[in-house]
Length: 450
Image 1 (cartoon, helix red, strand yellow):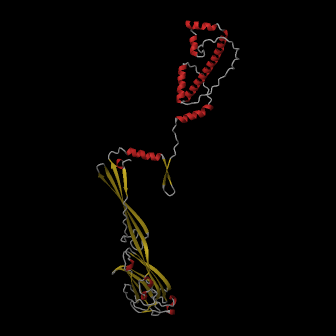
Image 2 (cartoon, one colour):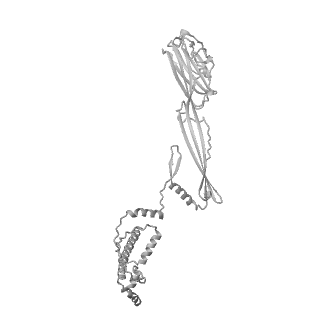
Image 3 (tube, helix red, strand yellow):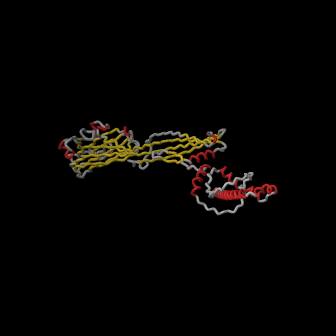
């Protein structure tokens, strides 16, 4: 087993620290007064720190990556109708359906039925004062006012927005006058004030529905709604009903996520076994297939390699299968090879390869008919003439051999028998020479094949 400290070793330590918080103290990125455009902004800040710690057998490199992701989200929230008692901001007396008098400056009336004309048969509010003064909220040309103060601190408005209103007005006398005024405060400090003259004196507006709004920035905790005007001819003063007030405000959320990743790499001194590790990895890659499954998993399958080992038995088997069908014409080579060497080559081939000897067809001559037996004394046994060595010796006879053969030459029948046996021996010698030639040819074939 390879020692883990003998080569480069990576130890991955992933430490993830997620720090998230929301902040609403950030100004809008597009507008500062009124409603901001809803946006999502992401800021990524990355800081990489590297430290090295030395040890006796190596050193450790620690890389710390600190990633800070800041996401700023701007949305527009709606308070709903502040003058609807069901929303919890006002008491029934101060609801916008004008069933009751808000209170304010100058004389006023709360008619109902036909006295509200096109505003409906329920109650409505009527401006009856003909004075010309400045209202509590600073609006000039006032004879009567209706004032409603609404606490909206629970909305936690800090990044500006817009206050919208709607109101229904029926002005029967063109000489009369009516306006809408809204003031927004943060505590006792005025943040914004807006006044709209709904129908100025001299304009025969009749029945109308008005809507508008006022932008503001920063924080508001209170709204003051003032509806006022003048009844100049003291006939039928301006009538109004069904007031709604909505505050649309910006909510800016800042979420910061912080992730710290630490990577430690231990490096051994020397590094002599780095090549061994690379060889092991390369061996794994070379002998395996890596297949990615549909689920994302990696499946490792060994590569089926063909068996390339060739053994002596395989070569012998192939030769035994191919030798009978191979027809190779080899020209006769005139080579003077001693018989003893041929015998040694034959023996060596038979020792090294157990090849089946080819069947040599030897043409057998018909045996001559036996001659009639002549009862004569049997001569002494003579040496066999079939051996080539003895024939060569007989070519040069010595004196002793001549003396021994003289008695045999006088016996003619025995001489005839000896001549027939000599013919057979010559045939057998020719057969042996043919066999030796065939063996020699087989040796040449094996030599060429090898």
